[in-house]
Image (tube, rainbow, N blue to C red; front, side, top):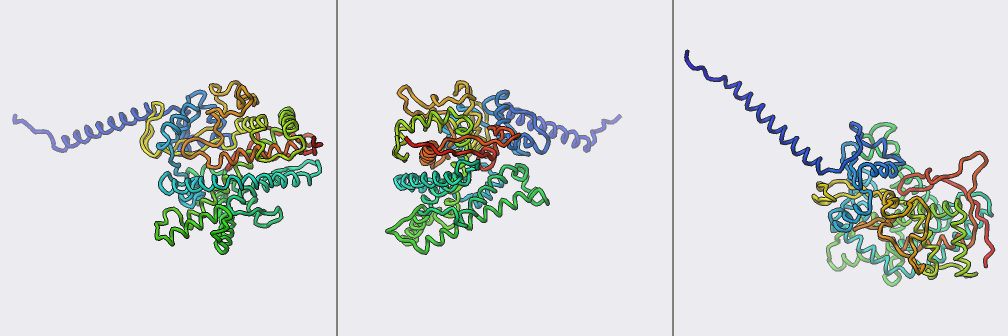
Length: 502
């Protein structure tokens, strides 16, 4: 019998399946090797990943997961892989030792809305424009330090007068606090302060409050942008965009007024400095770089948001803790009475008030007004043995770092001695990071810390605070915090009883 050759179709089929098997094995090997060097994490749900656990309590849930899975864990925001850094050890390696590699910004859809598609500082991508804007604002802050302190001293009087109007009756003092904080920031930005009855101020604060509330409920549309087009699901986003437009309209009006009255011999604030730099570059024939109308608007927007909302959140936590824990405010008041006597507190007294400042620092550790911050890798990088590709979202869990028992003995206990050295002077432990870490650390940290100490001292120098709880209502708790732009205590009321000054 003659030899019969194999069917060519069978040979092609065999070759195809052999190649397919090789491809499958290679993909499996690549995936296995990648996952072997990818952080561990809890099981995820299909499509949505871990989003059901990442709402108002996300910082707490991530901290609990870290106790089981380690310093660095992996979670999924929909289909997006995210690594979460939960310890100071991880923070230090990522944001200090590998600072450039972790200086990127996560490509969140809301970040584009917030930053006018990547302008300004807060959500701008890591690059020349971001560096130029950050360096510029940092320089203006340094040069304005003396004026900022003067304004701060003036605003303490406004704060005290505003709270006095409540006559010791139960009140939510957030709007009183907001006015003083808003005016410190506006003095730096615009060179002017606003009256509490000013319509522009009222609309600004209202928009800011609504933005903070709305941001806490936008997890799904942030991961699945197409949901913004779905009726009902997209309403929060539409409202948020409207509030952003309102804030930008306020800023645009102020910039227009400054442009009309720009005087190189009378620079009034950040806006004037920015306008002067734009003018200088145009007249000198230089490249505009990032000094454009769009960047100016966004940088001013970023400075106001950071200078008002996060500081307001921090101060409301100070009010809450002082009102809820009488021993805390008694210790501060004893120092104020001993050091100041009948003199009004000012920025110049800060170094003389270590107990007051240490109290502020301990409240910021426990409350952590900015518990979570997104970054992204700018290139492929290895972190604590894990291989992270370029563009990986990296979430800083400052809440977890502030409760790390390896850094803080009995981390849930209030103890201001953590921030005082043997001579009773203020010291800053490296794991204390309420203002962030690395190349994107808060530019206004020193100004914010001074502002909080001076305002808190003025408040407790003039008032004794107590929580007001209506009959039958539960006692306000730290657990009731609301996560938006910053972590705010749930609304509460206090009685502010005027003190007899020494």
